[in-house]
Amino acid sequence: IQVHVWHLAKALIRADQKVTLVVGGSMAGRRLNKDLGRLQIIRVRFLPGRLSPIFPIFLEDFSFNIRVFFWLWKNQKDYDVIHIHSRNGMIFGAMARWMKKPIVVTYHGITKEEYLQNYSHKPPSKKLDAWIHQNIASWFEQKMYHKANEVITVSPGMKEALGNSFGKRQEKTHVISNGVHTMPEAHKKRKTTDIAFVGRIEPVKGIHMLPDIMQRLPSHVQLHILGTGSGTDQLKRQ
Image (cartoon, rainbow, N blue to C red; front, side, top):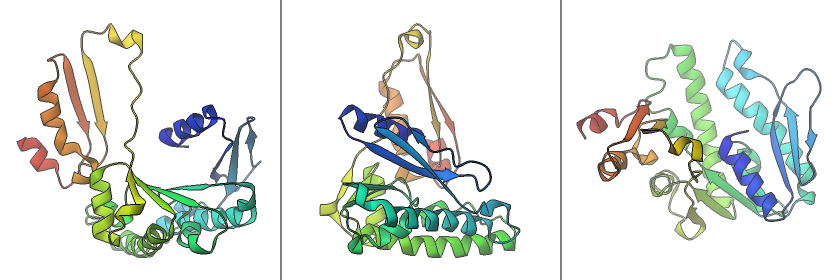
C-alpha cells in the first residue's frame, strides 16, 4: 500500500466514510484480509509474473489487473464510488462506461513516459517485454482516461502530459497535489533542514522548479536529489 493511498484512506475515514483497499496478495498461504472497522484491506492473489523467464513485467501487471477486474465486477454493488490508482485496476477503469458505479482515476504517471529512457540499454528479451507491456497498458490507460467519470492528476505537468498523450479532457481532469505533513517538533530542533527528492527527473514531476524554490529558502535548508531522467543535464545547469 503506497503512502499516499494510505493517507487518503485515513482522511476518508476521518470524514466518516467506509473504505476498502484492494491490494496484491501472495498466491501461497492465507489471504490475510483485514477488517479494521471502517477500513477493510482485501488482498487478491495473482500470478507473480516477475518470476517468469519470459515477459515478467507484462505477466505480473496484467495478472493483478485481471484479478482486480473480477473482484470489482463481483463486489461493486457494495460501494458508492470506485477509485482506481494509476494502472492498478485499469482494465475495470477502461470499461467504466458499462459499470454500475462512478469511477474516479488518479494518474501519477503514464506507462509510455516511464519507458522513454528506462529500457534503451536493456537486452532484447526485456525490450520485447517492455514493448508489449507499454503498448497494451497504454491502450487501457487511454480508454480509462476517456471513460472514467472524473480524472485526478498530481501536477499541472501530469495533466498536460495526459492531454498530449490521450487527448484533451479538461472539464473532467482535476489537479490535486500530493500533500506534505508538517514537520514534527523533534525535527525542528535540528540545525539543518534536509529535503530529499526521490524519483524520475522529468518535467512532469515539477522538479525544474526546485532550484528557484531553494533560492527563496533560508541557507540552513538543503536539497538532496536522488534519481535520473531526461531533465538531469538541465537541472545540473540550473
